Image (cartoon, rainbow, N blue to C red):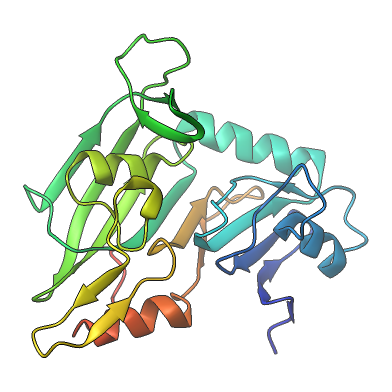
Length: 240
């Protein structure tokens, strides 16, 4: 039986890693007293020598987060990132399809000068801006939306959301970056996207003891799956 606490499910646990399925609405970390995924991880794994999140999903974003349980595990994940073998795949819903339907987005990302909590495409070389690279493909299309598969090649704050918005296809529910909060169907029904429709469905890392890479997957949560179904989409099959 899957262990859960505060809506967080344990996907995998061993001597090296604790892998969790983060729900939307829960920040990975926070400087304040609010509940966090890291705090829940400590409750689920109180004997771990350490618990360091190897990625920090935005509070609205759901999906797979790997915690390193030891210093060696942390070093292993850092080395995997540097080698390009720490791989992530995200499902996202947008109201229109990208052109072309499969490709790459490039664009340096920096802090929005009008709002330090947001990010924006910045001129390469601008102060604080860092190069960012995302691969994307269109998995499904319906009359009112598309389901995307996004693979970040770099790990900048809000990278996928900013790149999608810059491409003219902000993610549904992403109010910070121009995403529509609702979709009106042909029959007049109104579907609401109450949060950014972005879900980390897969993380793959090298196996620290050798052998095949470790792949961790989490199905989209109820709000994401129900919205996509209401948009006439079918349950997605993740690319290999």
